[in-house]
Image (tube, rainbow, N blue to C red; front, side):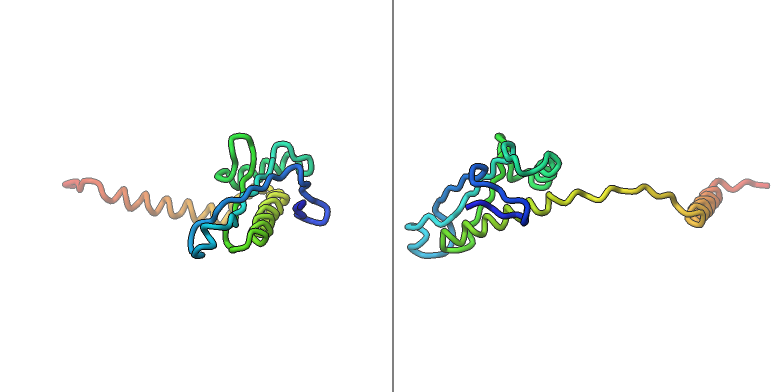
Length: 140
């Protein structure tokens, strides 16, 4: 039952816990009888496969899915079949981890061009002239 994120990154079974419960919604008597909803718990803090940076990005990207213990919760109740919901939950977890594996591109600070500076200063002086013209009219 390990989750294959990429060819080189596979989450082992000991980092995952799976539980099942009854799913709500439409489905007739099947909803009342079958526990088809899947709750996949990923022990993020104890995972040895992911790097520290990847774990931090994963925590930052989905804070609503984290527990106080540092576990990541993924649920699925799309299908009426327990096995398909388990596969769906694994796919959701893999896509979250895949997104966290890519480090963000560092921002390179840039300077405004000379033309942009010139235009900004011209607009400021034009606005200043407009405001200067709003004063009291003298009796000269």
